Image (cartoon, rainbow, N blue to C red; front, side):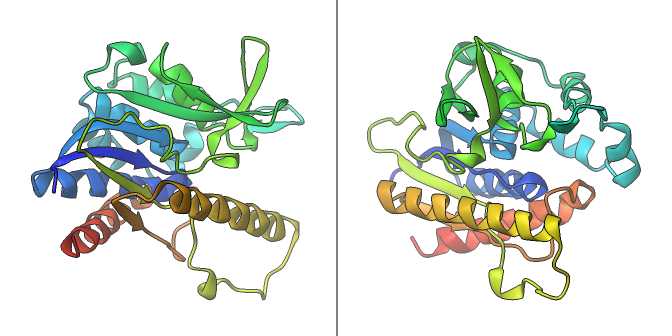
Length: 256
């Protein structure tokens, strides 16, 4: 089987840090990532990897605790979002250079959602960080991005694991890392409120979209990482999440 990999990284908030572990395990086993596509947190990790700064990003994540996350949240008084979402991007840009996507060392794309038209927007050119910022625009939390008359929100709304958008080369393996789901059997029904109900509904819809995408595209390897103990904003648990990604990817590769 080919050792070249077209890699697709899903949405999933902080759980997306498991993508780092998946990449490390693929490389440790001799696979060469020849292209990458990502959605939301997957777009961020994929972009950081594409510019060769994954190690620096991992090191930076070890400095992130809840206090630091609060400091990086640029709260807004707007009625349609809680945070502007630029402070954290600017912090990452201190050590990860922004580049035009078409000039990256390997094909990369990021997926966002056109809020008005209701369809996905695929970024294959232009500023990498502009694409990432659009892709991570979690509805109601981060400010939507306005580009060319369009209002863009998180790509996970439409295509949480864009297996159909990654660039392919002849004979490569299509590998998807899906951290968009939760371990539903472990979900508690004891503390229902507006937030938990809406969060659950969103999670179910995203999960079903990711399952349908996998059924349509038939990836060679799908690393399905469902987590019940980690939430969208658990960025202070980076090393735990990276190790989960590494272990789950190792298990998936063992059955090839």
